[in-house]
Amino acid sequence: MLAGAESGGRAAEAAQPLHLTTFVVVDLETTGGAPDGGGITEIGAVKVRGGEELGVLATLVNPGEPVPPFITVLTGITQAMVAPAPPIEAVLPSFLEFLGDAVLVAHNAPYDVGFLKAACARHGYAWPNPRVLDTAALARRALTRDEVPNRKLGTLAAFFRTVRQPSHRALDDAQATVDVLHGLIARLAGHGVQTLGDAIEFARAVTPTQRRKRHLAEGLPRVPGVYIFRAADDRPLYVGTSQDIATRVRSYFTAAEKRARMSEMLAAAERVEAVECAHALEAEVRELRLIAAHAPPYNRRSKYPERAVWLKLTTEAYPRLSVVRELGAGDEAYLGPFGSRRAAELAAAGVYDALPLRQCTHRLSPRRTMPACALAELGRCPAPCEHRISPEEYDARAAEPFRAAAGADPQVVVDALLARISALSGDQRYEEAAVARTRLAAVLRAAVRMQRLLGLARIAELAAARRTADGGWEIALVRHGRLAGAGMARPGVPPRPVLDLVRRTAETVGPGHGPVPNASAEESERILSWLERPETRLVDASSGWASPVRGAARFRDLLARAEAAAGHQLSSERT
Image 1 (cartoon, rainbow, N blue to C red):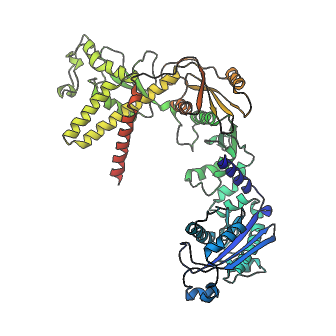
Image 2 (image 1 turned 30 degrees about the horizontal axis):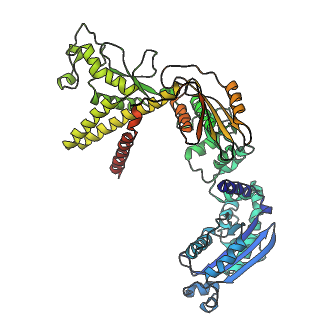
Image 3 (image 1 turned 45 degrees about the vertical axis):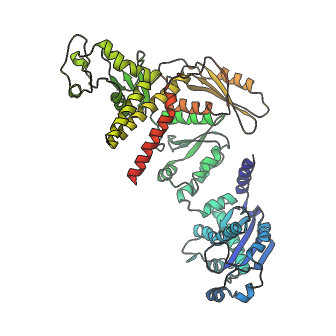
């Protein structure tokens, strides 16, 4: 709650007009060393708001070290002047109280802030982490080289004809910085900079395109949902999602956004459309569906769910594995969906290592023979083409273990692959063992994923609710693995009537074949992640939500170890 209040306070502060903002303009004089907690010889600070001076703080500081001669020449501060002065740990409480919750302003602010933060850390004071505005950075954006040759404080003071001139003394320089700040604020109005947040972003390295298109972020709602950047012909260029649409879209026009493709997208964008959603889950699902429907050119992920493939066992006398785009109604033994043919073929290689399934693509007849391939001569195929094995024995030894591994228990496949890895490692054939381990991970990953998806797809209707931080309820209605309806019961509103309304207006979803009959695998997995959170409550379901007792999920630890080992190997190879 405190974090939320702090975030809301920051947002309100950023939206505050500059003429209503309280600034504390600071300047330090130092011994010229690194910011290690000491070395400060003088602090000058001026508090202003709306052009009016509200207070002044100025004091010499004992730096705890000798003042170098060149510093004395530059500033006029001598060792005799700072010897009786208080140390920085005695000055900090007064300075931090003077700063309060104001915006800290300095010329070349990182230098002054660095010394102040180091001093606080060294002497046990909490740094208040104020908003910081750097007049040097503002000048780099607001003034051209034709107007000022550099952004030194003296140069800017001369340009703005300030009453008070810098002198390398803390208070004089702070007062000169106040006048420069006021001159810069007057210039910022011509750039459309009116608020504190605008000024801070303006000072950063924002591109001209970001600055020119920043108006696209205006008027958007601060709610969960989906945002769509559209081109002049209304084509979707990019689709994204956020808990706060307005804040997220605004971030595309700040210095934090450095992706080249986003800069290109912003140049082509003409408007931003917001789709408000009941909660984050609905927003994520809508985002996936919009990306799949429109394939926006600047989205990289989730664009082509139709490219998913399956690894299925064919229906014939001597079944084999086949990579297909779609499952037929009669397909009962399969793994998937896989994101690519390469991923499916990797899993198939793991199955071939474990089971004596034939790898040829011929349609074999139980009555006619064909010449055997090299795999039969190597002992890696039982040669059903030559009828060295009967259809019944082939089914028992090769096909049925695959059916079990895909739909229920992959123990036989796992044991065979682990034995192969152990044998290869014992023969010091470590690279081949690593390949077998990668194949084992591919098989397990596919089986775990598919069985998890099947458990949800078999439920005709499932209603769930998740408590929000403010006491409301996020409500989701899922039918056969697809989000059919979503709602939000605000704090104090009974959730059951909201669920009833969601149910009456929900999408009609019928049963289908396979683990993802009505939605993409990614959508069903987003729903599963939401349902599996500890704070989510199942309200009711048309049937039980179940997984096989001895299913692939019990090998999740083994899968995690295999993936971690593969990741470590890849990292080592890159190193």
